[in-house]
Length: 515
Image (cartoon, rainbow, N blue to C red; front, side, top):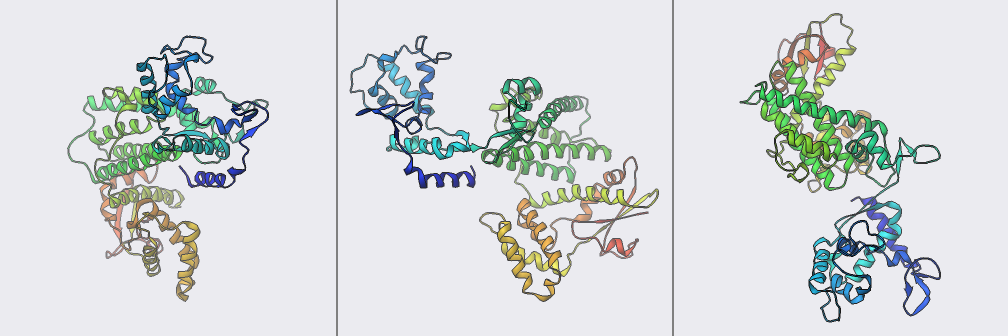
């Protein structure tokens, strides 16, 4: 699930031949032909997960020591190599046994149903022994059945609490039962998912668990509010505005992003896209609709509710079950199908939506720093073209785009390529600092939204995007104040305002003049 983990396995393969496979003391199985030697326990025990598949039938629950009768009526004395070879190895029933054939076939069926092991989750410290030996032993025992070899290993580091090592002596220690009682099972799972996904030590933050409790409670309240609004006719139907269409497109993008993260066992990244950013869309939409003096669209907000519940279900299943039922759905949320995009993700629509949200944020920041007293008008200036050196940079970046990976080169390769390119042009070399900053920013944007980010002309109408949300912008610039908003393309004639403000405008980065 990561290159770092694979590298650790490959490193282990290089020295494992030095591992002693037997010893003279300790736990383990005695060597059959010389009982003073014990087979090294890790080497001997790493296919025991195969036993998991039949343990429920042989032992049953709460019967670790075998004191209670076997659910399938088999005793320990009846078990031997021939029986296990029949269950696990596909041996023919060519040996004497008093275990009923039906029982043997039931045990064999359980093994064949559950195996192979789809995923083994373990600690990074076991890559150098247990996990690698498990691969070897599966390959050795089932050398004719590679379909029974493990399909995936996922490893992680140790778990810290609030960036400190867990320690009973210092009191920085938390048991699962205690965490469940303090924060609830779902909030604990949320904080664990947020703790980290790499080989680095994970960090369980109590503050994250606390916030998750509040957020999940608020999420339930929001479901109730939207259902009440729907019943009261306070959600509109019919045509959707451009911003709503773009918002749905962004939802589709985050659904795909989250699926990719979860499939790759990247839980924190999945939380970012499937919960944090997805809830950011809702927060924007609620605020946008309120300031626009329009009702939210029923289809948009109800789809958001359904998708948000399904995407958090792997992490917070108890919350998801409650919220899913509130929407009137039958069955379990954790068994429901993963949400699918309503349409193909439109990169241009995504850029237009992010242009609106980022522009409002940037203009609000500019307004907060403006020294104009009691302004009533907000002039917004839009630039449609890049400066010549930026066009050159974008055209060069297009040559670096990798269609196969859908990405720009890695940073360590990217920066030298840009440096070499601009150093070859004396005029560009004079602008090295600005070019490097611009190139790095645009490369990051291309990695996020695709090659379209490198086009020298924007694929959407900036003015049309802002004009549709003009009422929203008027109320969003300054808290508790409604401004008169005027929006200009800089290629228009007779535009009021100082040149110093207009000259700072760039494509996708409008500037502001208050008066």
